[in-house]
Length: 404
Ligand code: C2E
Ligand code: MG
Ligand code: MG
Image 1 (cartoon, rainbow, N blue to C red):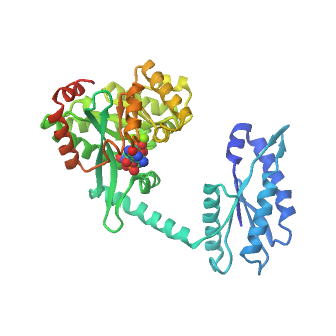
Image 2 (tube, rainbow, N blue to C red; image 1 turned 180 degrees about the vertical axis):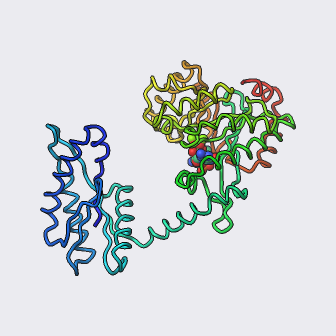
Image 3 (cartoon, rainbow, N blue to C red; image 1 turned 90 degrees about the vertical axis):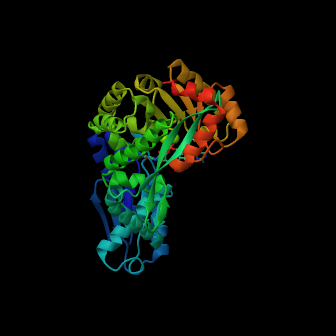
């Protein structure tokens, strides 16, 4: 059994190492008290412990002991006059069902422990299905760099509409991976892997290049759409990003008003100073910055006030039940007013019904995006949609083009 404390890092960072050390010492008697009959109880590093049960102890006995361990570690600890709740996640792997050597057994207990932690369930028994996932994950991480270099990334575009006049004002570029075996993979299946593999820079450059190439074709035929590209955390730590953006805009002979960059609230709040520096430089170039998934993070208002962003995108979790949840409706109205008082534009994501669209328009929301208005689609399809819209609304589109 592999045991990892749930809130140790947080407590250690907040209260200091002396308190962390004291807490770790208090863990030992609790582990010993509930794992009688164990062959070995050990600390294997940091806040990780391992328990080896006696030979012949099966999965059922392992789960019973793990349950007792979780209960024991859920009990508060007294450290430096504070009462602290820590809790633990336990992963169990059994010999010989799950592995027949120590290394593999420990790895599998680790996989089970991570799953227990992720699901917030206390303890979990190793399940062979995990490994299928982690093996596929590893394979994908390995393939990503070459896939990016050889042009397997595909960009789809979701239209953004002006909610006040109904015109298409721009698109969001959303990456997909056309995988030779697994088919079209969605961003939640590989963008996080790109961070792990250290290739976010290549991924973002590839999306920027593709999206700006498409955008240049639109501008060439008079469809002055603004394209929004998503950035990941590593991009905001990359001091070379502003120059690369400039180089690509020049390469495609596009005005800076044709590009928007989306960042999420959670990524900027991590390493603020250097990220804000990159954002300022992008801003100096004249690129519009947009704060994505707004509302699910925890930035303070004063932090927001000082972020150089010109647009807020309200997270779709607030939009989806706008019709039925009065509290969400009140919050969305407040966010719209707040953004306007900061001179920011507001975009609502995830509009799926007409009544929600109309409600947002009546709240004064500037732009909207969602399955009702248009799903993410290949560039060619978006071109047709924009042409039709432009033919119907020549005046609105012209107005949208000068809104920057
Ligand atoms: P996001 O930036 O918030 O993008 C919007 C996501 O919401 C898209 O999912 C879109 O298909 C989905 N969506 C739009 N309208 C609706 C709706 O009405 N209902 C529902 N249920 N969903 C809607 P997608 O394409 O799967 O992208 C997911 C996330 O992956 C994006 O969230 C973004 O954070 C990330 N992502 C996508 N492309 C890139 C990229 O090129 N670079 C980076 N760093 N992240 C990307
Ligand atoms: Mg986005
Ligand atoms: Mg979003």
